[in-house]
Image 1 (cartoon, rainbow, N blue to C red):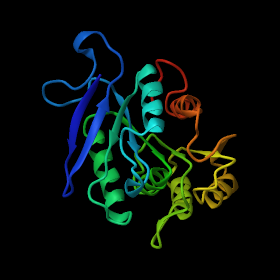
Image 2: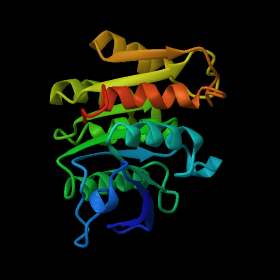
Image 3: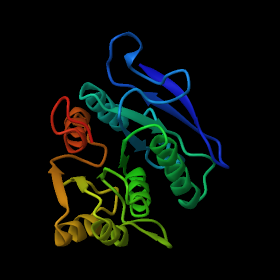
Length: 218
């Protein structure tokens, strides 16, 4: 089940809320717009100028695995391109929307979206966790995902970094290197940047971080 959501804020941000399987009206949002599930993961898409959007295969795979485990997933599209600044604001606004409706909120992102997720999580100490798939080291000269890892540790926000050993697209090495120095969990996949044929594996791994077993949510 999926509902369309307009994320509040100064930018035009639209999202799809995928809700965990339930009986009848036990899934989704109630008439007041409040969640019936108690946990959700906000999913950040890859670079919008490279056709990244909320329907990305990797985001859908993560969402499918989460909803199978009883966790909702909010996949959103960024507003107008703003060199990473506005996109981070979009993610933060999506987290704020989710936090008003759910007891626990996690954050996921792929590629550019993985960097957005890490940077956003570094200012959200109440997050249940953040998982970044093939994150780039920077959004722009001013926004550094590597530095955000130190902030996550200081805040006590759980994190997991997933990466592909044959990824020649994203500058992921500095992120993984610093994560391992800090004791943040990393997982390697024998794949390229786009995880061709591995989306299901990626989805299951990310979902296992947020919901280690069916019935246990973030």
